[in-house]
Length: 110
Length: 112
Image (cartoon, rainbow over all chains, first blue to last red; front, side, top):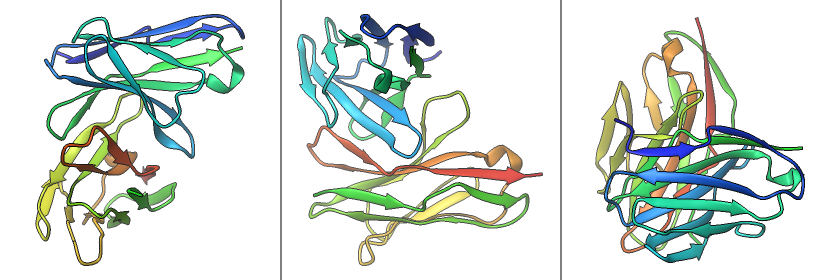
């Protein structure tokens, strides 16, 4: 069974609207991450968390917020979606070294 | 700072030919090195990792040697298959660090 799941798998949003992407893990890992993937940029880290109720900024946090209400759940929030946030978003959890990725959410902002 | 640089793609090969994807890294610490693979429509998944210098990792016919002197970790396969078409990421992690540092990925197309 998939240990990291994401919802929705795809979403179309309007510019200026609010978008919430959800991630759930059953790995019992402390660390969770949100990445965005764009052609030519690979995987870029947006936010991460190492404990419930705490989140940290990654390399490209502007325009994004994150929420970790429990060890299992980690959300990415776009308060005012913009065209430039069209991308594929991946959630991951991590043990000592290896990251385990979800299947991704394709977000299109129109 | 810490970084990973890998072959820019796309790389297009015919079935049965050999593959090398170059990866070099920079860090002042002692990293664990990884190759991840991402198949179409999926998230990246670990291909293999090598925590120790001068050791080799391998999986599914792919292999790479952690060369500490050359700070390299090149991915190789002797004979690629169409099913190997995917994006390959070189990555490193550091002890007690939150972050895994990924290269930009190399898109491999294997023609039948």
